Image (cartoon, rainbow, N blue to C red; front, side, top):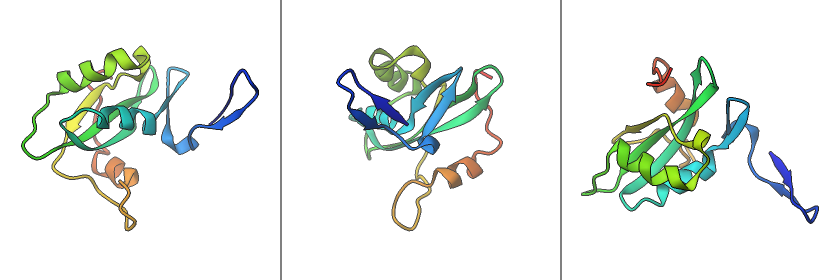
Length: 124
């Protein structure tokens, strides 16, 4: 995705596959991941879009907490809410013990989607 600012500078924001289209608006998964990662209890995170009957897709955040730390879905959603537009607020937070990774160490969202292929959004 590319944006042009008021001074005509072009900014490359995301690759299309790193975006979630929700109700005609775009959500940047890397930006949402960075925000959730800034919570002190979060060790690793991945944001994936899941199908929604009204909004096309909605974000779900997969989280691994730091050892010895605790956080709830509500706590993380409340942490994110004041920092983003309403449509960026995740529909769900899923806590995991580990995330799938590629050979290069990046989170494999492809594998994550496959593992959760039968997942249904709580808002759908």
